[in-house]
Image 1 (cartoon, rainbow, N blue to C red):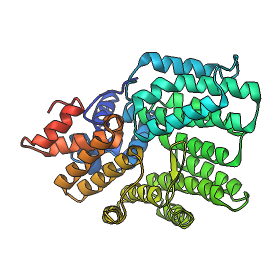
Image 2: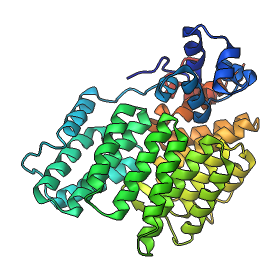
Image 3: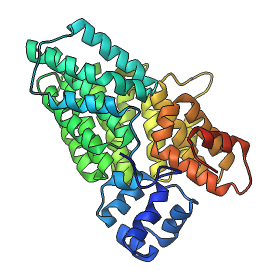
Length: 389
């Protein structure tokens, strides 16, 4: 499960893919609908490859998006095979070996591991959790039991998406949707969010937006209350991300406004199996979308709202990507040292995630190429990522 190049970033794949086809930069730029200047900078490591541009390049080359971004290796191939085996047994129940209380404890533990971005432990524990939840649901056939199955598969999707294992992500969301249909409206909204995420990860942003819009219509039919606001909120967060990648400012702003409005219903972020909604995670998503829309000053201004009077309380799985996106905006504004500061923070908070995240890989690639002289901080960070500079 490795991409064309391991390091120093997905942008390094672009030139290799282009040359494999015998294409010139002029042709790839034309087919992808981007400028030759942008393409040249991406290939030379002078500009980060965003996932929106990567999707355009993938479509131009007739490739899946993960072939451009590259897939990250599993921490344990044995655990990954065990997970695939558990998924294949979705409709082959065995005697339940875990109680409802034991499964709830396992899901709660998964929330902590996911929040800490401990990808290795998530993979190690997921096979038993998925298998146990499925067997329990088949034995009891209650909405609560099927909700636990759906929650387990939401974590499978999260893990697969982090590594860009898209076949596994597709399969996980299919099973998640089947389980959620027998659960409750919030679980259905989470499943729709993850289904839209599949389209996001494949680079089909308009299809993802269609899933989000349909799910919002369904969620709006539910009685008013905190969980209705939560369901709608997480869908708006997904919607703004998709619209940002599509460069659709009007749709992005509509989802941003919707998320901010719903966030007013919460004094602090609510967490359901590692999926947060509230004021802080809304800000995190707006920062990322602002970067996608080239509103880099706005992204940095949002980050400045957090300080001693308003500290970030989200887990590492959310704060590490936040610092990556601030780094991306600072680099776009030619603040290399500031970008390196933010990238170091992202690595210190969630090193396993930073090692596999395409934004982190791209930032490190470009910063490495830009620094003509030795930079001890960059050298230390590159060493953590197993990059030779």
